[in-house]
Length: 120
Image 1 (cartoon, one colour):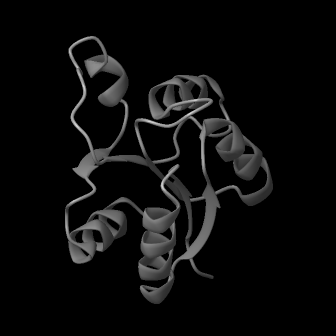
Image 2: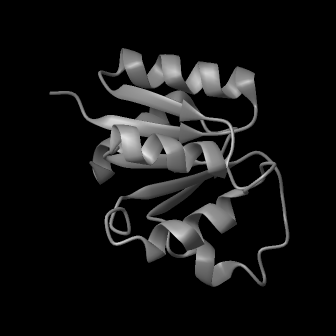
């Protein structure tokens, strides 16, 4: 059975591109456009890994990961933060450190797939 990945990002074009790439690599995917939708997907899909944008509307990636780590059912689910922009991480280092990996969206698809494969 294929491993399932939840991809959370508010950029629809990126979401589509990464989903196609992950599916092509043999992974099942479920998608959400913000942290609130992601929690709905978690309950339905029980993913093996989460790829999570940091900056999103409604509930951003940092809020999402804080809530995720408090949920005993999903607190051990591997998470990769993936973001396009620079942001001030000084106050968020501890939260970002709770993810297993952190990549910029500009990284090539093969590197993303390699990192996913190492975590699940």
